[in-house]
Structures are given as C-alpha cells and as structure tokens.
Amino acid sequence: KDDDYQTPDQIAETDSESLTNDEDDGLAPALPRDLAHVSLQFEKIPVDQAVKKSEEFYTLMNKRRTVRHFSTQPVPREIIHNIIKTAGTAPSGAHTEPWTFVAVSSPEVKHQIRQIIEDEEEINYKKRMGKVWTTDLKPLKTNWIKEYLTDAPYLIIVFKQVYSFKEDGTKKLHYYNEQSVSLACGILLAAVHYAGLVSLTSTPLNCGPALRNLLGRPVSEKLTLLLPVGYPAEDCLVPDLRRKPLDDILVEV
Ligand code: IYR
Image 1 (cartoon, rainbow, N blue to C red):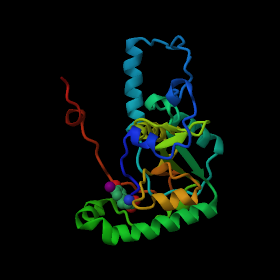
Image 2 (cartoon, rainbow, N blue to C red; image 1 turned 90 degrees about the horizontal axis):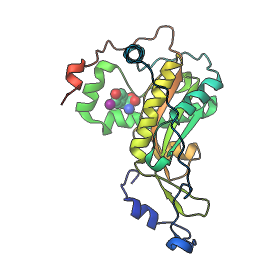
Image 3 (spheres, rainbow, N blue to C red; image 1 turned 180 degrees about the vertical axis):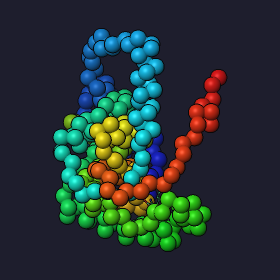
Image 4 (cartoon, rainbow, N blue to C red; image 1 turned 120 degrees about the vertical axis):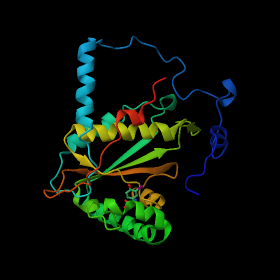
C-alpha cells in the first residue's frame, strides 16, 4: 500500500489534528498571506553567447554516464552540501519543496542499506521481475550484488514528502510532489556530474519502508531515488550505449 494515490482533499481530511483558525473556516494558505512580489533578478545574455552556452552544456551533460563501479576515495562533505542545495533549487508545486535528501557516509549504515537492498533484489531478480525484464537487463550486466552501496563514499537517498505538517498541526498538502521531486532528482544528477563526480540512479524495488525506517523518516515520506555518489573505480567499465538522435526525440510543431 506504499504508493496508493490520494487526492489533495483526501489527504487534508485524514489525520488533521486541528482546524482551529476561526477566521477563514480554519483555512490559511501555507505561504504568508501577504507574500511580497519583488523584481526578477535576470541577466540577459547575447544570442550568440546563448547558442554557445547551450552547446557547451549539452556537450558536458552528454558525458554523464551511469556508473556501477565506484572507488572508495572520499568526497568532501562541502561538495555534497552544494549538490543538495542545487537540487533544492528545483521548482515545486505551490513552493512546497517536497523533498528530503538523506546523505549517508556512515560505513555501518551503508552496510545495513546494502543488506536490505541485496536481500530484496535477490528476490526481485529471481521471482518478482520476471523473464522479460531480467532478459532486457542482461546486456547491462546488473544483478542483486551491489558493491557500490558500500564502496561509494556517499549514498544520497531522496524521499518525496507526500505531505507535511504546518506549525499549527494541520496538514500541509504537497501538490505535484511526484513531479517536483523528479525535477529535483534531475537537477541533482546534473549537479553531481558538474562537480566531476559519478552516480547511479537506483530505485530499489520493495525497499521503501525498510529504508525509510532505517533512516528514521516519517510515513509521509516515500523513497524515490537512491544515488551512490563518488568517483569511478580505476577499472570502471560502462556499457557502450548510444543516445537517440534529436530527430527521434523532438517533434517540432
Ligand atoms: N533495480 C535492479 C534492476 C534494474 C532495473 C533497471 I529498469 C535497470 O535499468 C537496472 C537495474 C537493480 O538495481 O539491479
């Protein structure tokens, strides 16, 4: 029952401890009612420069690869903090910022995470995923043994907050939390790559509640992404994949 969809009104109805604000039928916006609107900070760049910058950014991002073999070389905490601050710049529904990033560097906790994931993934590969899925994965040489979970200096685990609580104890609804967190994850991947680090986008099947409990996160948060982050192993191989050309991904109307 981890991913049951509830409408915003259904979420607001359940568990709200009090609706005690007498003015406005107990309804008050989550953001300040008198929120100021200020001038946009925007620097216009010349078109030729913009073309060049867009090309350069594509060239950089096109070098990003998913890596499954990590070095144990440590990564400065400051880089992780900057990367997570960058991910936190993502847009979100009604500016609810519905994300929690857990950065794990503790070797003991990484071992516990690895144990939880390998135990589930063995069942996933052998029973749950089925023949078609495991056959599709064969060229990528993945399996349920995941050394990267203990080798990588950091595991960044992203939780999506389906809702949270306001200071008065009422529920704060997190509109479009799925899309908001997906956008933050994309920016997170770009920030990791820009900082010269590598990552692996992993979404451990059936591990959500166990990892949430291990990391002490509330039931309002769902596991979205687990990202080992660090440097690639010296002998790191990646599959020789090609990306679709523009013609295959762009429809111009
Ligand atoms: N989650 C499993 C299986 C897996 C699934 C897909 I789709 C991939 O692109 C890669 C792996 C694992 O991490 O091994």
